[in-house]
Image (cartoon, rainbow over all chains, first blue to last red; front, side, top):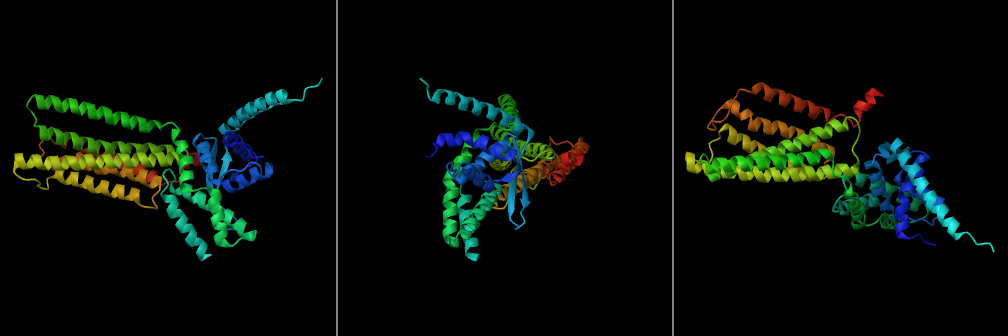
Length: 111
Length: 281
């Protein structure tokens, strides 16, 4: 099963915010985490993630900083900000509402 | 490894053609590309193969540019709106003022055009400098997002181009008027030399904009120095006297204070982002 483009785009913000709520992370690792969590079913074009991250930063939901990894490679880490936690709370409420509504509609009918 | 470096240099060149993708974003994408290449190589792929695969996964310059284009819908930064509003208000006021002088026979059409274009050119450098000052002040507390930096870089370039065109047109019109009224095109008068300095400054400013390694921060901090150049060319030239008889040297102390303040802001702009908040913490 492949997710539709629109659904992938709509779920990108809550997914990124949720991953960052686990701790600071960088672009490549965020993509790997999404793949791991979805069992490889949610596949982003790698380049699609960065506009989302930059938009979140512009909204002050996340903040970024460059750091050097142990291997000496420069990585841009993103960390969730209090505004981002608020946005994530809202996203959770909205997605839970959609999910529970659909679950009720699609629940097998008992005779 | 040398081969991979060459491939990455080539990829960066292609990506540079994509609008909306700034240097910092490109560094971030490169970091991503390298991570992916490493992973693919460790899974058994050859380096060129891994590179091609990683580039395809990342997306083409066009695809990435179109994704970033969607971010342009974010609202314009307030100081930019204010700067544009002030610029338009000054232009309209100047048109009214010069038209009244022209109608009253106190100014020729050529002189009115010269004053209009030069004033607008200088004013645009001032507005660009004011944006630079707002940028430095805000950056003391927190860093700008890459999206906003790209936007400010574009605004600064447009302001620079407009200022250069207006100032150049003003100087040429002034020279033509001077030939008719004073019998020569150019006399190295303090104001004329000042105008030339502004043009040279703007050429340097726009050239820096086009340099590959220029950052948005560098350009915006540099625009603060433009304030000093125009202040000295516009008002500083009055201290030296010359053919432009409307000059006054009464406010030299004000000019000095403005120059010192701008140089101070310029130095503050060199400090790391968020230094004020870090100090408080």
